[in-house]
Image (cartoon, rainbow, N blue to C red; front, side):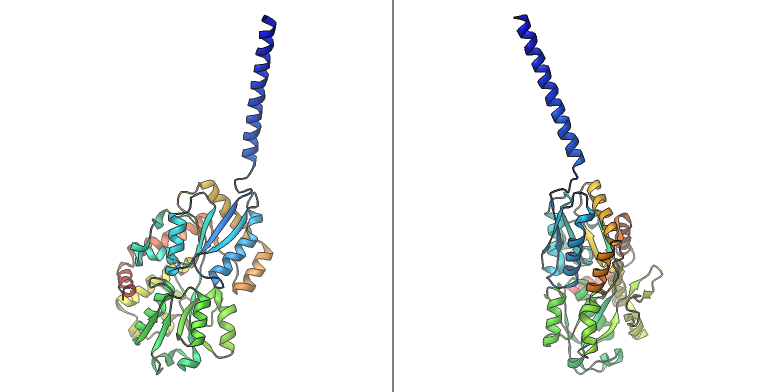
Length: 363
């Protein structure tokens, strides 16, 4: 009886040790298995297919998986509306902060904090920005319909100009409108277009006479039409430096900034302060960001993967071919610092200009 009891005890101990070893092995395996293995990451693009945001998102989605441990699948989801704000509210306010959803967008999700705070469902100061790329935007005119060839022609055109844009608080909508106000021109503002592709079609149909396009769209979209005489580009936003000067993009140095073509007497007052406020975010015109609350180690994994991606020769070659500019960007903490510094400037240095923009978007 005692021998049987001893045998049972030994069996129980052995089974217990086996269970402990199995659990330890599973734990070790789980620790070795990268979080992203077998997962699907969504890049939410807040604009329609065919535009620069969509094109860039799809390039990143193709090349990024091999640089993330676990080689996850990456898909692009277009979520249009309100100049990208619907997508931002979804990613930052609805999607789980698990590192499996990220937003690729222009500056709207940041600027709407100042321009339409009631539309923003998150605290921009808590969002981790992990990839940013500066970009100077171009204002493209329908040369045939407006008879405009040079900047000085804008003051003599017999056409009441119609500006195309997306949401009323979107910088790409506000900047061309503000520019015409600075020139003192009467105009019509037509908003609601979903992205570059729709705006280009509207321009070619004559529904609108001008719209703003990111520098990334210059080579594939604007330049061919410049050559055939259907489009003329009169200015670029440039990049506003810390010294309060407007720097031409080195990739389109032949195009002047609005600061260079606007008459000196027009560069005063609240409207000019508003223009400077709208050019501040060009330092982070393209952004990739994650919801607040994503574990720091997952933020680091994706940030490091983006750094490696940016050095990938095949990616860089295709990026420049498709978007007409180098793939260089800032990642991780450096990217986040650029955005947070700009946010601080907008809160503290350009308050009067921001108030003017709010009034403008409400007209």
